[in-house]
Image (cartoon, rainbow, N blue to C red; front, side, top):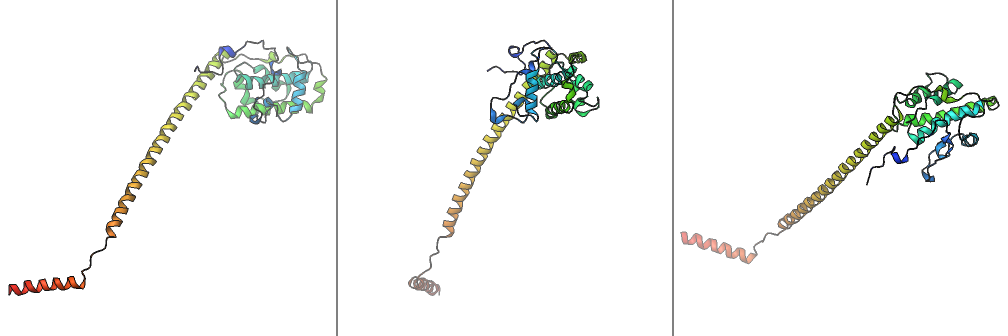
Length: 254
């Protein structure tokens, strides 16, 4: 069976950066396995998130300042969950800094996310980034709720204008993630093989030990039987005969 890589040609589609693909919802179909995240429809501000996501156009900038800020945040969030941060989303994270969602370049969440957007780091399932991305979206929605006037201000900006040159293109990032995935799969297979050998050895050792114990138990039973054998005690008649024989021998010697 062929290995299914995270980034295979048959499941990769080139889209214009201005396409608001984040409007798609791809929650885990197994409801009992869903996490408390926006991606699985269980985010902290899920109702507000859904309302604003529905209001985004299929293509291009948001109509208001608030919608463009939300557009940038959700594009960043979507690239994380759907693509593994292989695209240049630096414009989105830089725009959130410009808009005031992030306080400065030293902001901890900005500092964590930014290197992945330009390829300085490759996302390899780090828990820290996953938590940071969720917090980023929480912060964005809280920021918009606290600044209602942004919903009334017409937008004249495109977050893509804040993009910077990527340190690694998206195809190279895909390759790096595929290599990592393959190594993880090989390591998992090797670990499973070692575990199987260890389990087999343990079973064999246990069986051998049981055979040894069984053999020792049989030896102990035999020894007990030997030890338990009663010594014959001469009867009075036999004792008399023995004594008579001794006397005879003594007399004949005289």
